[in-house]
Every structure is written in structure tokens, then in C-alpha cells.
Length: 337
Image 1 (cartoon, helix red, strand yellow):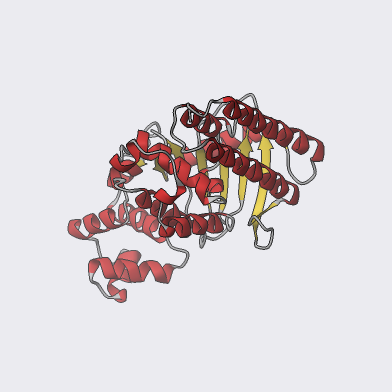
Image 2 (cartoon, helix red, strand yellow):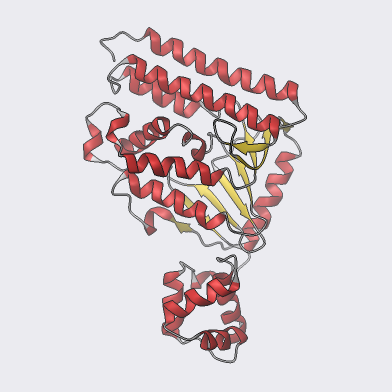
């Protein structure tokens, strides 16, 4: 690859991270301590980035130079969030979610394509207590946080600041249009986690576990309302968000995956060592994955605005699953809890 071609590709990756070119210019100038005129000269190819400048920019914007150099058709480079930022407390995780969403919402013509085997993590944020439970589970099993290891679940373990950021996360997510692919197993993982922790004595009382199940039911009913309306909304239906299109497929099992598509930036995010994820902005991978997603959607059942029968049947079965889980939890003895 010629020097100018390499530099142009490198700088374009940075420009694509910002909704406006002027914002990118200001940011690059700040990183390199250069004037706007000097930055524009590099953009035009009149000046060449020095190795030091390129290294600074690559580190600041988390851009893989290997990705630009090695453009083999069968090679794809990923970023792994667990390597980029260690989770020392639960606030680190929610900060990462919120920061990522805030980077996406300003992008022009942004749309998410979301095939998943579990309810998208953002929807738990409708009920902070439910999201706290997920953080509690991950804190004990994945992040090995000492202060969570031997105490039963209690929403008071999490600060008011985490609660505020949790609500801010769902408010940000409903601003982004999405097409989502679900199956009837969408709630199974969380229901199994609630049952396990109830039976193992990690709730102070049985009612706490049952309350989480009730929150899952409320989320399911809210999602049904959103699918019917074809748009995202807050729990009260007052704040109307972006478009929401929902499909059902019981034949294809997939991990949790998000395709981010916009005029400025496209990428594939995929769960890896859950709740961590890997990310690639490789155009070949994105095109392949988008084609795969569209082929699956073509063979899936729409359960959105015009599909009342399929939608009602789908969510009724999910509610029944939650009710059966509640019955099992109610059967646990108080000594177990």
C-alpha cells in the first residue's frame, strides 16, 4: 500500500468516529498538539504523518495498524474490551455501556441489527434492580469481586450513582433504531440465574427472587407493546424513541451479536467470555455478517406492528415461562432461601 493510501485509510478511520469532520480535526489537533492547518495538510496528503504521530493517534483512537497493513481476505482483527479496560467495580461496566451508546447516538443514519440468544442487556436497565442482579451474578462469577462473594443479593449493594447511570443507559438505547431477532429462550438464562440463586440461598427472602421475575414479566409486556407500536419507549410510554422491529426465529441459534451500521461507522460486536465482547470494524466481516443477518431475517417470523397473532403467541409463551419459574421458586423451602 502506498504511503498516502495508508495515511488516508488511517485518518478516515478517525474521521468516521465523529459525526462532524470539524470535531475530528479538533480532536486530532489536541492529540498531536498541531494547528488545524497542519492537520488539514496531512488529510490532503501534503504532509506525511510521522511514526510517532501515527502511534499516538492509533493509541488514542484504538485503531489497529495491523488491520491496515495486513489486508488479507481471510484475516480479521478484533478489539477485546476486557483487554482495554479491567472491571474493578460494577460502575466500570455500566460506564463502558453508557459511553459506547453515547458514541453511537450522534452517528448519521445509525441502525443496530441485533440477533441474540438472550434479551439485550440494555432492556434490563428499565428496572435497575434487575440490572443490579445481573451485575451481582457477573461480579461473583466473572469479575470475582470479594464484597459480593458471600453476601445475598440486595439492590442496596449498588449506589445511587449506579442506579442513575443504569436509567441513563436505557434512555440512551431507546434513541437508536434497531432490528432485533429473538427466540422463545430469550429470558431463559436470567430465569435460570434467579432460580439458582434462590435455591442456593443467595436471596435474603423468597419474595426478592419473585419480584425479579415480576420485573421480567413487565419487561416482556413492555417489549410486546414496543413491538406492536414499532417504536421504542420508556416504561410509561411518555418518551417515544427510535424505530423498533422484532423478528422470531427458533431454528438458528446465535450468540449475542450487534451490527452497528451508519454512514460514518460500521462494526460487528459479538459476545465473548460473557459479559465481555469483541469488536471489529473490518468491512469484509461487516458485509458478510450483514448478509448472514438478512438471510436469517428472510426466514424468520415477524412479530411487529402488523403481526398481532404471532406477536401475541410469542409473548404469551414467554410469560408462561416466567410464571412456571415463579412456581418453582415458590416451592423452595424457606430454609433453602
